[in-house]
Every structure is written in structure tokens, then in C-alpha cells.
Length: 226
Image (cartoon, rainbow, N blue to C red; front, side, top):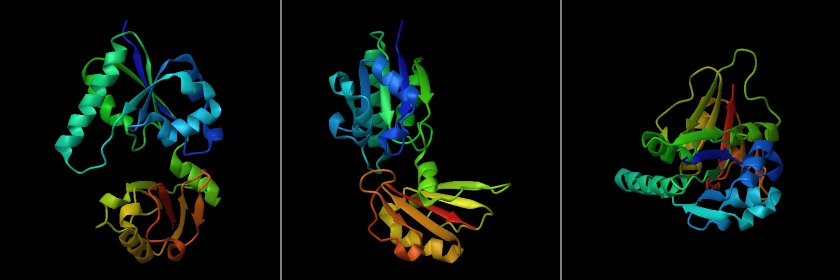
């Protein structure tokens, strides 16, 4: 019997946001994969270890995810990572891959999930609290009401876009081009809030475009409402 690969969301940062199911899977399985060269240095590990201290005694598998634009190099690394996970699955061991936020929203696990499924392995995704839901709660605003649509964009890849569609917007992956993103937000005339490092000890909250610094950190999430 081959093992099962689980993609498990651990929430945005606060260990109290972890689900009971995520905690149970970590406790029940011996092989835990984490996105980074040094598993114990990853944010996902630090979140989970605060709730499941026995995580330190598990077999921790580093999954390298290069932050580069070379698609060929990225695909090579994802394929290599999938093969590493498969080496444990072939032994009948389950692999629990811990990821920030939710396992279905811009999740690093999805890159290797496609390879695993193509190779005939069983994959299960375990939902966690998405960062944009946690950020909306921190800003104390509803993401959408009544019949309002909600648009979720990786802003850094949509710098030529204007926020003209009806409804509210979530802009993720904005930090590296924050100045340009702020220009888009100003033109939209929307009410803007941003949470940096949501629910982490280093969390910062901004309630207007002008408050948002151009050098905001990687984990910055923007909500723009009509």
C-alpha cells in the first residue's frame, strides 16, 4: 500500500487558527514536509510547533521552492520535490505537507500535487483559514455582502489591470511592486485596508492607501472595497 500525500493548511500565522484536523494529521503521521531548505526555520513549522511540540521529533523533509522566474528551473525543482515525496509514499508512509494559509489558494503544495497525481498517487487537501479571511477579520470588515462579487488577484502579476469590476478585491503577492499597486488602488477610488504579517507577532495594520509603505513585507494582503 502506498502512502497518502496531504496538503495541510496551518492558517495565516496565529497558532490558534490551526484546525483540529491539521493538528490530528500532524500527530498521527511521522513524515512532515515543509516548504524551505531548513524545515525548522520555516514559518509553517513555527506555527505548527507552537500547537504540536512533538513535531520537533518527526522526520522533517525540506521541500525547496525557488523564488525565480525561470520556468524550466522551477519545473525541475518541483519535479524533484515530487520524487522526494514519492520516495516516502512508496514505503507506505503518509506525507503531511504543511503550508501557510489554505491549501487551495496560491499554495506551494499545488505545484507538486500535479506531479503526484499524474504519477498515480493519492493526494488529499486539508483546508486552513485563508490569509485574506484572517486579514478581513483583523480589519473588522466583511469581505462581501448580499450579492457583492469578490475578486482575488495576484497583484504583482496584474500591474496593467484596473479595478473596474463591481464588487470587492483582495490583492495578494503585492509587496515587490507595492508603489505601482498603490497607484492602481488610488485610481480605483476604493476604500483600502492592508494587513502585513497577519496574526503574527510582527503584524501591522494600515487603513488607507497613503498609510501603506512602499517597502511593505512579503506577507502583505490588501482589501479594496467599493
